[in-house]
Length: 216
Image 1: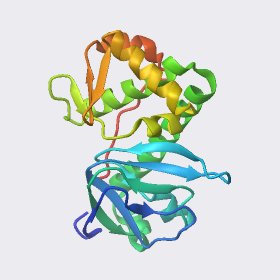
Image 2: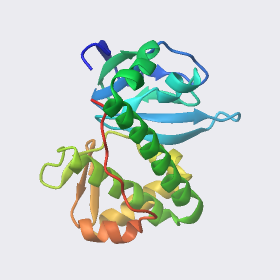
Image 3: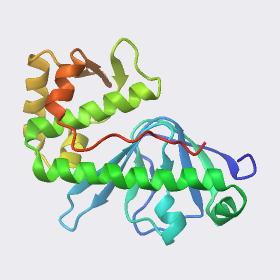
């Protein structure tokens, strides 16, 4: 892995790390910070297709398909571990355990996209937002980023709306409803979950969570 890694890169908030349709020579792991994956539609609207948390691998589509099928943007200041795309196949030849980890990452992303599709297509607004907040809370807790039931959540309400197929107004009202019920508080780039069990009940998970397996 020391030979595979070529260095580290700092991306400031709002930086486009990879662009849809582009063919980049580098792949990344998010060491610190958070970002998001999105697709721009013909009418100028945006569909968020995923959120990047510490430990996530970035650019697998670029490495396998030769170009990105979505864009990746830094939401916070991010530290990225940089790899050469040209050496990806050497990883499969010489490091089978690491290669399996990479395959596991691809399978995990497919799983999450399936859950998001089910949430967007089949859940009502409250359940959609609760599902996403619950996923953030459990995932960031597993990463050791939970302090007194508060995890970092530096995204905007518009990002949540764009991910769940909701209007900004509907998203705002739903978050307010969860706050008034004393279940969660989202403020100052942090999510505090006062009643985890009630949040999980509202979330109505559509599948069993699979454990993350970071590449590095």
